[in-house]
Image 1 (cartoon, rainbow, N blue to C red):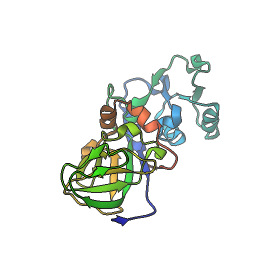
Image 2 (cartoon, one colour):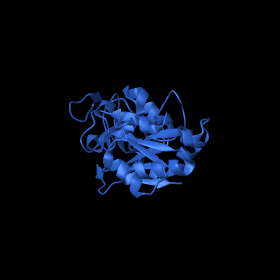
Image 3 (cartoon, helix red, strand yellow):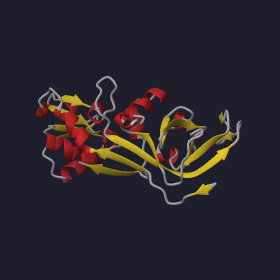
Image 4 (cartoon, rainbow, N blue to C red):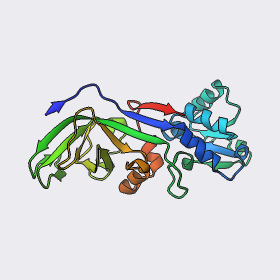
Length: 240
């Protein structure tokens, strides 16, 4: 087994996708307020707030007083309400939520986040090999297993074990066996991979990648919960 140290854990947020989604709305944007609780559902409060303010959204709902202060410190000219505190301060604005980030299957829009991990080890194993602790998965035939440096310490929900789709190179497999604290395994069959290869947990369907809505379907968990749980060890990067 070849092992690589020093890995990337990255959630890339395309702010232009959010901007396009907002531009497609029929409601006048000054009459809208965006739900940005839970750090904009894990996408990053301030970068998303800046983008929505530039697009003309007139108000925000945030989780904490500290979040409202952070928006004020940015000098953004919007009304900000802390959830549960005087929500009438929204002045009857239309409340927009997860659909702004591509997280609402009832109001489909392009996903803004692409979650990427990295292969840190590759191993060829025989048939009937148990994978991860508890051996909840066994290989049906000789297969290649890849170890990915993301786990429940990063907020990857453990219910994704043996369920969630993952893209490794040309292969879309599923998380194989139980998710551990810092890593999980994917069975890629007869395909090959190398340490350092990118692993896409969810991203853009147009690129053949699983989406966060695919994860939501597989796990029976709302997409907004999946992204909101992503931890600080995952680097957020942004593009316009």
